[in-house]
Image 1 (cartoon, rainbow, N blue to C red):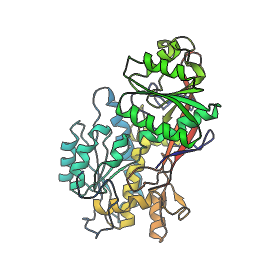
Image 2 (cartoon, rainbow, N blue to C red):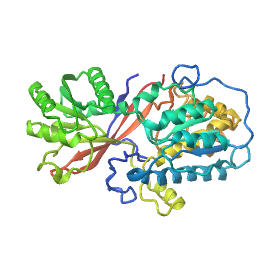
Image 3 (tube, rainbow, N blue to C red):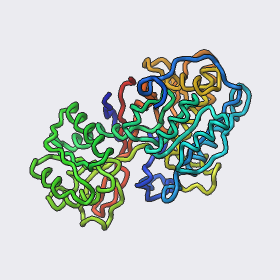
Length: 431
């Protein structure tokens, strides 16, 4: 179901999620600092039905950390967030009076092996992995063992359809959720027609298809759609130029800089350009003077509150990056709240309740609760829980995907450097 951009600058900002490949500054600075940076027989991720309680009375949460090399900095933020959430849950009484356990972490790109070790350690729910390409290995092992999985970072569109028997969820939005926001930025600038340049990759193709659909829904004409491989964007840029669009939406990652340069050579520059989350970077002198002046782009998430930053640093004083911290924190809280709703700590019971506690599908049926304690108190009082956390509204749909996605908007200056200039939210009905 198509996401729709529902509001712009002025939307409440509570936390930040930034793509690791784009991060160029830690989020611990002042508020003006720039954040850059199937296994069972069921079809897809249809939620499991309610099950009989079969937990052992202790809620155990595992975490898969699969970041190595240049991405290793991502481990600390997720681990700190998980520890913070567990500390707060236990301070509020834990699960049924027993402390919630965060199982010892391990760092490895072999997610299947990590998953097997967590099953052996009697994990009820697992947070992770980070890399979408490694998710299937974890899902296959954990879903067979009836362990709930909540990734704070997976964004690949194809995972929506991956068969998990109802055990896989993610607190990060799929890449395609950004499409209506990209179109809205173009339309807000007065564009009536757009050209879409996309890198020939799974990301590029998925997002460009979603952009075309969003443009049609918004009454914006798509006059050209052109694919390119990294370093070979000249022909695609020429096709965009020939179509005479009011704006050009660039959907790319590795090939973004080359595509922008070719668009500039073709006379399409500056405020005509809208950049997807994969294309946003601090280009500076890597591009020609004023190549991006007035261009806009987006990154997923919202800027972190000073309070949340402070709590994370209290857990890990050496923390210098908070990528995926909000989504990890919310994933742990949701798992514990689902256990309260189920009155059971088993993975199957948690999976059966996650959709409900993330935001009841019947609009207006619950007042949002913003902490484990508040949600648990509501459930114990016989009221429904609707957890809205550090990453904002969540509202899992029937596939385990979020139904609301927040984005930070960045505008480029003459020096080809981006500065945060607003925010947008894309939302759709659960289904």
